[in-house]
Length: 169
Image 1 (tube, rainbow, N blue to C red):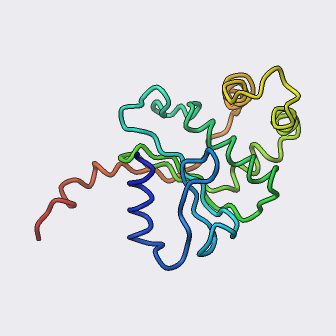
Image 2: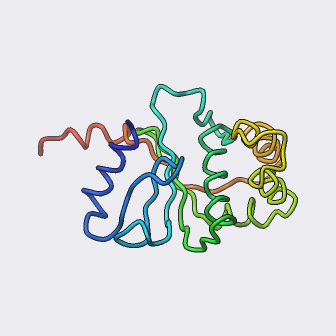
């Protein structure tokens, strides 16, 4: 349900006449680069319920299911579909928003040959199971834990603007 609110907000605020916004496969939302779903995906959005804290970021630890899903969806687009038009990846729980430039995912995930090989084997059903649980817990989670660098992102919490949003002036 959260993804519908996000879609409606983005469509009605910014993209109504310019870009298709909708689900794509198991991805919560994508923003296409053009007016139809036939154009490449430019933005991947993972939307979680605010109460779903078990799958959400904890402090400065990005290794959560929401982030792991972004990694999977990015690699499906980038490696599987050869999409070179992805610009941003977004995780939101309606209140908190993490916006990450795709160039960081390109560097950390797509260009890491051992990690990409693990993803490709998973995608080709060469692992013990095709369940995404395997990808999240046995492939993505250990690799993300091993990353020593900070992944820059834009972060904001809409609740920080509550007073301004409810100002009748």
